[in-house]
Length: 267
Image (cartoon, rainbow, N blue to C red):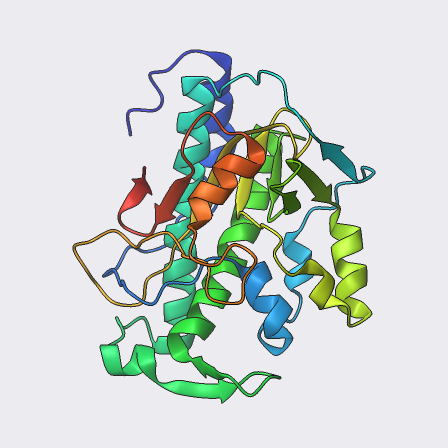
């Protein structure tokens, strides 16, 4: 695989703990109609997300606000390569596992992707692509949790929630316990406009972000990379793009990265 030749401690450790886990069979790709965050979907379609809270490792830290962040260390190249290897493997596993379970391992057609399979609590259509996208996010995030925990203990967060006030500017991290409480109490509206990246690599706290990754699970095969989500009308940042808000709110020095099955890392 070319990984065993590295002799520094990180890669030796990575090879020892990382290759036995989440790789699944690699089949045909799919694109278009991708879905960005299982958390965002769960907030509006809780029926699709039984047990979704299990993919959020609890971060027992008080809510912290940052008005002006200082200089932040960038990820070293070995750490970045190890992280991205895991993320690509987990994306492949998620795609394969969900299609094998729900579609006999076959690549879906455009008609199958667009088929409405149910309605959410607000009466909105839920397509098969949406349902698969949500399921793939859940599988991928759980895989990441298991694989990165021994590799980067205490240095990554899955779907952390941030409130961003551009006027100040000020970014506030909302602990998962608070998010869960708001959802249980039917106060999801208080989370409107929050930012929820899939994976944040940090220096020990979600506000010390070094790199941000989002899974994209398109439904149909395509030669083009799935785009970043553009926030819809009614969103506090309507018309703006996900990755731009991530960069601004978290003061990232590098553009957030997409992870796509079969394609891999898209910068």
